[in-house]
Length: 158
Image (tube, rainbow, N blue to C red):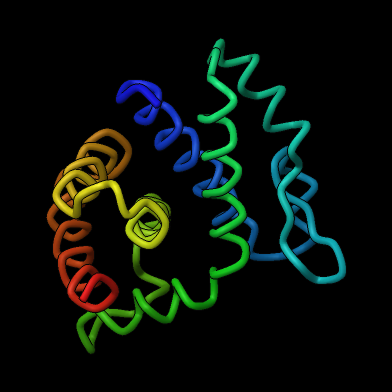
């Protein structure tokens, strides 16, 4: 897969994961085109996501689309683990609930990449996370994202 295409997949994955973070209540799911609950389990709507890609004029290869859905599958399957992992790396006086949703989505995606893309170096994953934070989060968010990910890397890529 081309580098530019990988960047597009990363950004699309971020956007879709980010949208799920506003669904704290099953009743709010009506507002999302991407997410639903089935038997109390979070699920994405593949058809709506594919329509979104067409609307965004993203002409992605099959490999890139496969990676996008692998990212989403991993997010759904391991969300509780990711939450606990992030919580374990927050300072004692900092609550998980206070982490900006944009930062959480970036960190979730980065953890997915760290665990599932062994070909990607840690440096590339952190640099891409920093770029997303600079684009989609607050002015200083990239420092927070960098610090959390640096600590998480030490734990999951020993």
